[in-house]
Length: 162
Image (cartoon, rainbow, N blue to C red; front, side, top):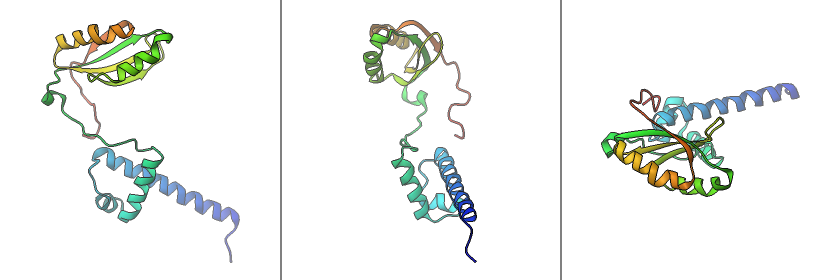
């Protein structure tokens, strides 16, 4: 006896839900170790490597996976100071300032926020003196105003699972 349309829809929903769960499991594993091979992920999830490869390729194409990077211990590469810098900027200067800000080597993240200060950036420097020179010589001239620099004393959890 053929399945009813409702039964087929239910089966399809279960199948696609399982595939989304598979994507989530693949992402969880890759976030812990992006060097895992398709074979290793497949073994962990009891799926063939070709399925894992296809799912990862689809997530790369639809930009669920934006890229892969290396997490470096900042102190081992000469970064002694990590700081969050919050600031405001006038709308007419914002576009050019964001473009220039994103090209600065010391800036590692830029966020647009709600609240009194509209921009939050994370910056790295070898020490506090270099950080203040960076703020005065690179950040302020871009038109950022009402700056507040908060130096990180200790990172307790920065990359969960590592």
